[in-house]
Image 1 (cartoon, rainbow, N blue to C red):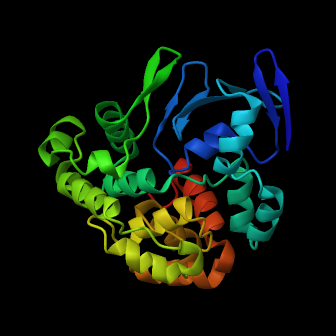
Image 2 (cartoon, rainbow, N blue to C red):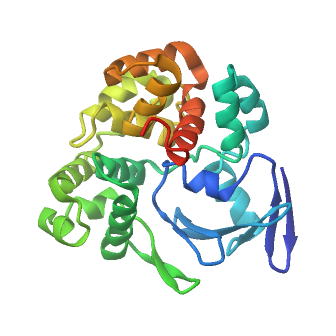
Length: 289
């Protein structure tokens, strides 16, 4: 990775880094696609904008110190994704998938926002999830600033969201049946449900604790494990990835649990990386639809 300061912003040169791949692979929802083709995202109260150029990514609205302090880890820049792609490409299908989504990086996201966002994601579509996250931020978060004609707000913490009225979440954020689950999960998290030394726990032990939260089932728990707990051996199975796995690997329709078992056995510790490459490749190419 090479990072250079210029009058226009920071120039990032990294082969495995493409904003479209990172933000459009289903792993996060707190971002906007701009008219100039750039992406604006919010993380830990900071607004960052990324515009892909011919030989670099131009990073705007963030100085070098803030980038290294906050966004270096957020974009998982300490991990060699060129090496990861080689290790993941164990067959021709994975080779195609990693070539297709060559710029994907798995984001290291804030825990509470990830939990609530993926509770909202259950049986939902990405545009609706993004809108709900935006409205919750605007109604309950803190104003951060304006950028490219939009006002941005931080995602609220559990202390604030536990006191939200479920009917308000349903009416304004359009979260439907997830309204009470969001409030109840926020209350549990505020009361310490996730205050544990997760480094000392196995992935399975953390998964069990997550599933105790209202609105968190196996798939949502796996997304939280992958995107907030850095458990890269996790393989979340949603409708898209189930179709992709059945079409490209299993060759028949099977229950979700069988897809998970197959993925864990086949991809092993790299299952989370394989999932992201396959998800993006399968959804964009409409594999199995």
